[in-house]
Amino acid sequence: MSAGSMLPFPPSAPPADEFFARQFTPSSSLPDPTVLIENLALGVVEVLGGVRDLEQLGRWLTEPVYKLLLRRSVLAARGRAARRQSPARPKVRIASRRLMSPADGVIEATVVLTGAARTRAIAIRLEGIDHRWRATALHVL
Image (cartoon, rainbow, N blue to C red; front, side, top):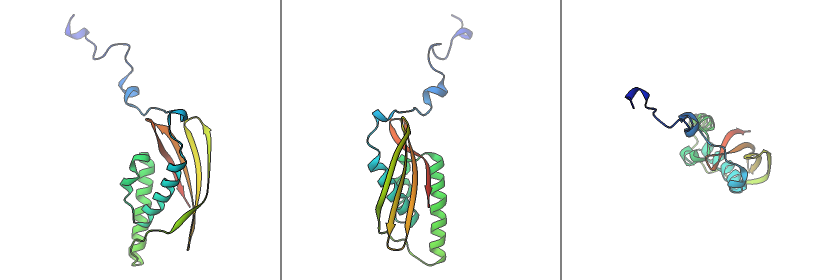
């Protein structure tokens, strides 16, 4: 066999792009998302409050959501600095949560957090990616 006729991989192997791309994971192969939804909501409020590092949540966030939360946390830190406030752990509790599954491997949830001074609503979309739930969309009100 000449060197020019050798293939880098067998013809039946999937293209490298598909092999290394993120893999969809069905809901039946994933844990109950309720605890993750609650912990993510509380974690997001703590990141915005400056008492938790964003990297601690990174495992459960896709890159666009991570960048969004990074931008929001920087703006929140600037606001605290302008008001000469130090970071403080928010005293919040989960007032309500709603989860729905519009498709297999997808969870859309809203969590309402109440505190002494403020009530926040957080919308999170989880998708089963690479055998774990990952937040693919996040909105904080």
